[in-house]
Image 1 (cartoon, rainbow over the protein chains, first blue to last red):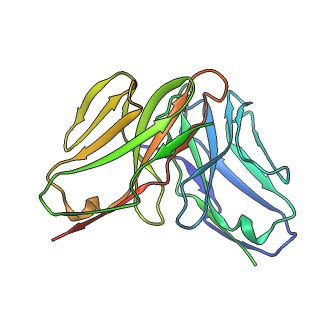
Image 2 (image 1 turned 135 degrees about the vertical axis):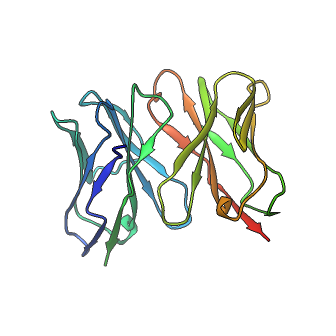
Length: 112
Length: 112
């Protein structure tokens, strides 16, 4: 069965650079979520989209933005990167905004 | 806001039964979810409760008491591969209903 696909798997950036993370949800899933997970931490909700509209916003810094496109894929844009942004970034999708989330394998971002 | 509390670590023996507790405080409760996360991997959905009582799913069961703000995940016939972090997560109704808020997770070590 198709799963959530994230790219890239690993990303190394320097401070103050920008990064773009991509997410392709499971086909027919209408809700996409972004989570940030630091080492040894729980996943922190950043933002979600339902049917291409922002549905909820969590602890996403102003330096970050996200959108969902007409083909339902989503991108997380991160600017002015800081060392503290180093984390695993998970995208997840669901059908109808339920709590049953299907997570991608994540993008490991390292900021040096 | 939401407060989710679960033990940081637990150890149990292969073949045994273990119960992982979770207490929560939230406004507008709309479901309690359990996820399993192996180190460096994505969380995977295990079980959820919206109403009080026990939900059984093979070796995993989850219980909910909404009046007590309490849930537990029961794992039977423990296997070595069950060594992982178990995340309790709460979903709200109304504003903020799309986000799933995770607890800090319980790291379970299964020993021979």
